Length: 287
Image (cartoon, rainbow, N blue to C red; front, top):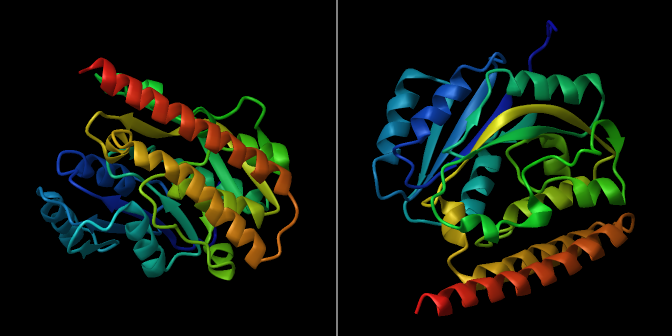
């Protein structure tokens, strides 16, 4: 479809020690069929050559903005910084070791605008490069594969809230909603994306689900996500993320869909307990 007006879409890319992969990520974004994008790269105090790679791309491509945290502040801080810098009417996120398809931004934008919804979500292509048994620690309710019952335009209700993936990188958000409700990322080691997505869903009216796999997610043992599962304390963040959501609901007097959040919270508590048991069992067996 020809678009007569192409607003800026901001793509936020937090980066930490991804010298080997971030070029692949940026090349994919630069090949986008939707051209009016700004790419905001936040280097989170990388110890390798990540910042050098980012600067080399930004010198050639004027739509790439690079900022640097002088020490490692965490992905939540980096994404919040990216949000503050974003000039686009719409916001997307991309992990620095993953890849957008060339039509992802255009297809997501069209889905959002043509269907008059507050959020669009696409399916994901998972590329497994793990050699460890990390998969057993993956979150079942935060699965990357879209639920088969989610398709097309749907109103926000308890079922949609519970079944929508809580990752950021297969979604397009309206910056106006983020700004109006001051939605940001709580400073957690993991599950900060869960809190962000749930808050956004709670103040949205409808969502459009694309069945196309437009995002390629690369699972690696040495990724930031992979390292999160090495620390049992990080599983508490799944609970803390929901406490942030409850505070958000209280602040904005949101009463609809509370049952869904209560169920999600109970699932997170059980998940945290199960995962801590698995990690501890794995550590004991390795002694």
